[in-house]
Figure (cartoon, rainbow, N blue to C red):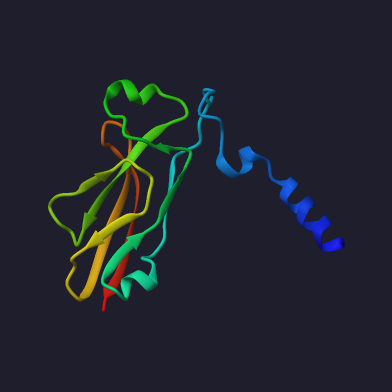
Length: 133
């Protein structure tokens, strides 16, 4: 009984807003800077030659909306640019879902994930280095 009561109390200590962030229906005054968090590839998939990279953002919603008009949206919106192995090009992800890269040859690789605003200006980045077996 004590364990169940503790679990209920711990779950109630965090509000929905604490877990999922502010409501997308209300403008945010003085938004804090957008942040990007990127994990290394999922090891069980990497062993199969598949690169699955999970990421998340704070203070920015990843959505497929672009252009100057989207700069005034609150809460802030944007997307990510993904560059594999210093390629001269990148691809864009606006889903917020796991990044998937397939077909890389065995050996060391790098994936650069950049957080970008609706005008494609980079606001932050993180590089993940790994080796495909």
